[in-house]
Length: 228
Ligand SMILES: Nc1ncnc2c1ncn2[C@@H]1O[C@H](COP(=O)(O)OP(=O)(O)OP(=O)(O)O)[C@@H](O)[C@H]1O
Ligand SMILES: [Mg+2]
Figure 1 (cartoon, rainbow, N blue to C red):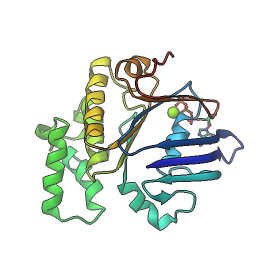
Figure 2 (figure 1 turned 180 degrees about the vertical axis):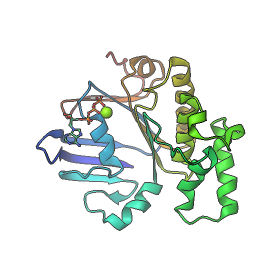
Figure 3 (figure 1 turned 90 degrees about the horizontal axis):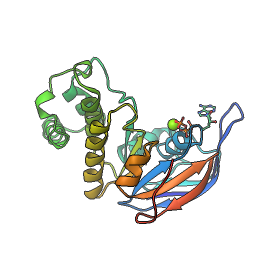
Figure 4 (figure 1 turned 90 degrees about the vertical axis):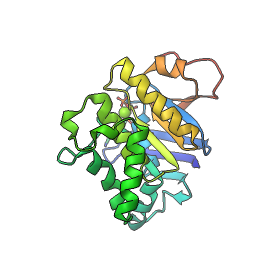
């Protein structure tokens, strides 16, 4: 599903953020990416959806070679990958419905199909009653649930989340985790960067620890916990 071999990322200012990382993540896995600030977690994640291009190495995601991928093929790659951010990144002038539908409209689906699927995912995240509301009228937890609905509306193979609970209180964080677990149990691979050691130690999954651009630990689900 996701394969990295000797991947190196050097930013144009000379900073090396990822140093020769090799890793395989299988279809259906749930993986936490942990590590201190500046370790390279976000860079690791950005490489996976081709927000950043690897400087060296081999990187394949959902069958796409991300080192060689052409710009015109990136929209197709992005349909296989849903992305969730700490700050939600919803479109403020669009309603909840429009925010989610927009991700599907760009794939050229028919209006009727879009409506059915959008209502389905908004139901899954418990926000069917908020379709006509604007993001500014929602709580943080609700906004994050809309962004998750948007990320999964095209039924991606992978869901990537960079600190999805970073701006949320514990209760809303657990709600988001329950949702991500549910999406994962339906077969979607989930890769989630987080600082939240309580979550990592409570809801057990594989843990990849990055420090200074290198993987320093890769623990299978069921091995002992992660301490921050
Ligand atoms: N666009 C960029 N240009 C140059 N250097 C960058 C860029 N983005 C990140 N870096 C650097 O790359 C390194 C890794 O950053 P990254 O954002 O991946 O860390 P992180 O683990 O996500 O940190 P945090 O926990 O604070 O989010 C840091 O040294 C950072 O300063
Ligand atoms: Mg980060």
